[in-house]
Image 1 (cartoon, rainbow, N blue to C red):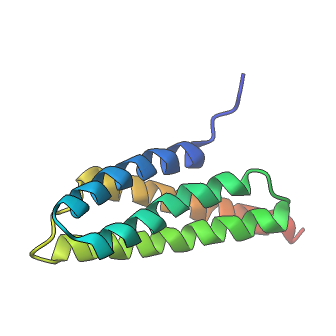
Image 2 (cartoon, rainbow, N blue to C red):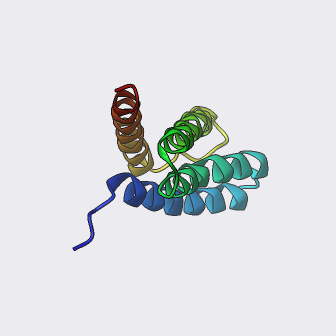
Length: 117
């Protein structure tokens, strides 16, 4: 039986939601934010997936890149939620992103502690 990789699963699910929301933004002619959000939001899962085949130091580095992508994505979603002319992001996106952020923080902290031993 294959072990479940929660951060990989959540980041993939989040990327699918980002694609949908980015398409909505493009329908509303909000092209710049749509592209930025699409890049950072799908980049989270791409870096997490790439980290799966890395050695320990590279693994942590890739996860830190994912964490940076989370922060950037949070920024674009916040802009959308505060700008009057933009549609609000679905609430499920914020919850998923928070779960991913917490998991990444935990994995990075745990992996860093294991590497210092």
